View (cartoon, rainbow, N blue to C red):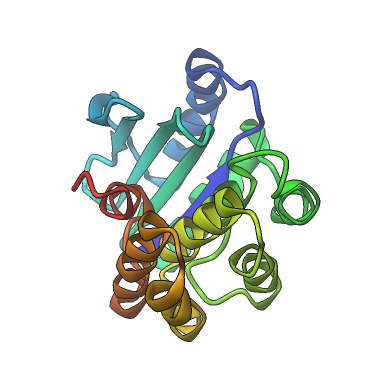
Length: 209
């Protein structure tokens, strides 16, 4: 199953996203992709989802509202990369997303001042190791501020990038904040697993799944 994440612009409400997605779904009919009406799921008090399943199960769209970070993002999943590319291309014409370049800039400049910048960066990053985004995470992992290290550890775990395991190990063993150390241990396990859906990994890292 191929998967891609797209982060929505700040202040975009669920109702607005529904309005923007509808014409995209109509355009996808020309690609023989027919999506059923959405259904609602609450993974936790702070994580709510709306899901559109393609009629023949060729693809699944998930709108995730993460109220803690805060962030809203779309997960596109498809049985073939070709289908995923078609869906992403059409969605990007109708829905307002934040480019990864802007997410990197925000995370690099505001990680100490605005909680969520590092996590939003990973929400919008590829499941394949991204050296540029990883370099920003490493800055957070080495920060003096505990809240920055905690968020960086969370973001590293969400990435599922095996390349970050060695960076997380000393934090898991030596960080004076036990919550950060325990989260780092969970993050190492997530990174060793390889790509998984990041919404469910978020709950695991929080210790609620």
